[in-house]
Image (cartoon, rainbow, N blue to C red; front, side):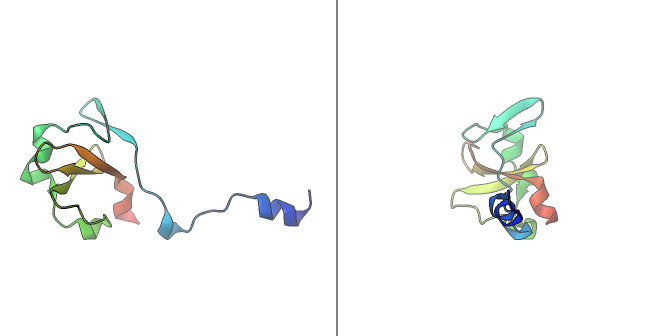
Length: 95
């Protein structure tokens, strides 16, 4: 294989700014969680609510939802029942 072909077929490294911080599942309090699951009551309380989501590089929460912190991850949950809508790696804060 020629060097030009190798470069063409090599997987492109995504720029640091476009890194995907989405998480499919995580563990917290010895339980596995994924999108669609309900979080325990304590994670729906004010002490766990993230109000300065911009400082953590998180997208704006949808109306009727808020970000919380669980198991080293940022979790977007519905205000009422605490249903997981989206999960982001805690590493997003450090980028």
